[in-house]
Figure 1 (cartoon, helix red, strand yellow):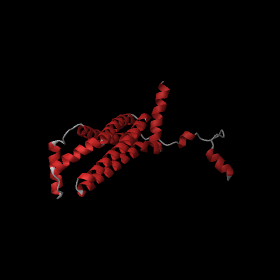
Figure 2: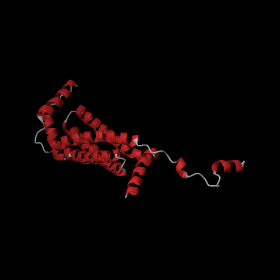
Figure 3: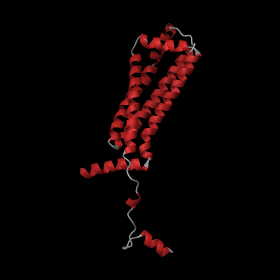
Amino acid sequence: MNDDVSIRMKDDDGLAPPASLFAPRPDKKGPKTIAILLIMGSILMLLVGWGDVQNSMADDFPDADLDAILENYQNQEINITEEEYQEYHDEVRDDGAYSVRGYSLLIGGVLVLSGGFLLFRLNMLGVKLSLAGSSIGLLGGFGGTWMMVQVSDKMLPKEVTTITELMSYLCGVCMLMCVALAFLPLLNASARAALNESVTLVNEEE
């Protein structure tokens, strides 16, 4: 019985088959799909971050945006005046919440965007940049929104505070998804093999 097993597992020279026969096949489609999703997410991060940075430097909340917000609250039968929301905006701005969330999402978005393009080219550096950017966005995005919740709790109706609190959780979940997506190529053996293969090819060309 042992001889039969030995014959099947070895060739005529008595050598075991190379380990490369059992290595996972590189999966290039997986990392590229993740890269596209990360790029799309980074664009959203940049848009939200840029809006917050603008609000952090604005004396008054933009009238066009304010009208839409107040109309939405009125449709939900939440009573809030323009003056009350402007006071809330001033407090959030002075408290630094806009800046915390805005700059975190901007910096994180740039890193995720760069990482996404590199990952699409199967560059391992793309994974590291995406992880760093999404982590910064997670901490700053959730932290900044939670600061807004604290201000809202003092100045605005309870319903508005609840909505802002839900937004903070939504922001956290979205950024956690970005972190998970960025980390996925390292967990999947086939995707990791594609990235390692890219590194090997570059080294051989050098």
